Length: 395
Ligand SMILES: CC(C)(COP(=O)(O)OP(=O)(O)OC[C@H]1O[C@@H](n2cnc3c(N)ncnc32)[C@H](O)[C@@H]1OP(=O)(O)O)[C@@H](O)C(=O)NCCC(=O)NCCS
Image 1 (cartoon, rainbow, N blue to C red):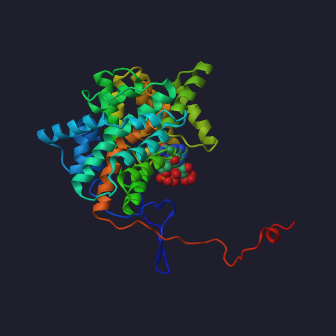
Image 2: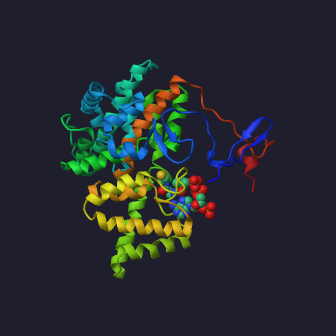
Image 3: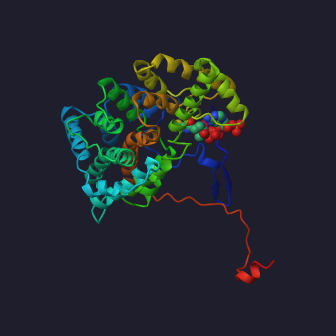
């Protein structure tokens, strides 16, 4: 992959490429691609190593403290996250009763700003202990808000958090409205860890931009949720499943096995210049290692072998036709389908993992801050003069 930066300098201004592709606005110690450009690293470990092996609590501690926790630290973070899950002010649940059946990402943005109004002191502070405490509250409480919003809008009742359950199991239970098996809970937990961070992705960068104004963490996270909602970012896992289910239905109507029909389906879409959701990545140009971890769990869940055959065939076709690899969203689309997670909750689930990265990046930004305020190159007209309505709209 060429990292040739197409920047020009004009009158002392750097004209960056559209989308800031290959532009590095800052350094980070949290996560990113290693200097050889081969692996995404979480605080020194490869993403697939942590995704396959670490618990939600271990990975959260790693992001925030830079090292995997020891016994006492693990007990501390588990206790805090499990306790905070149950400490959402009742009035927030009351407010969520008012939300319509909208996309659940709205519940998150709405709920997080409400949480800020209840949790944050009038004077926001910038010391590490204070920031870590609020990060843990957000990490624990955002999933409860998403699940409550969804359950209220679709089922009319809230499923309350259970502090005696592990975070991932409890969150999945609130979403699917039944007790998950240990395997289901671990598959879900692993996906949350895989989603935790990814360098300066769009929602993390949004969060850092808001942090750089020294706004509070709740406001910054609300911005991150907004950025993640877009189909080119977090929304891709939902769109990927919708596409795979459409292909499945068409294959059944045509009496063809999906693992064969998927080729025809993709080729038709590409011929119409449509994007195949769940393929392509700004960083991974050859292979997204997170897909290997997700595949391991897909295989163990219902119809795993069948779905893996479909996914592998789709990957083969996309690589042959476009030289694009599948990304994590193509795999979590099927994993979440197997777990029985409602499709509109896929992006909220992504946010439930990514909030660990967002909060760590918020803290890194504010503790070594410079407001992020790029310049623009204005290319619109100049010299116009205001005309009253009658004069400017004369026929
Ligand atoms: C992720 C994504 C935004 C990366 O964007 P990017 O690095 O700017 O890559 P580009 O959009 O410039 O794509 C380069 C080329 O591949 C094509 N392409 C990229 N992703 C594609 C996809 N999923 N399906 C079909 N073609 C795709 C583009 O059309 C472009 O073709 P062109 O050069 O002929 O115009 C992009 O691949 C995408 O939209 N993927 C689908 C959404 C998705 O899965 N997002 C989740 C990311 S984790």
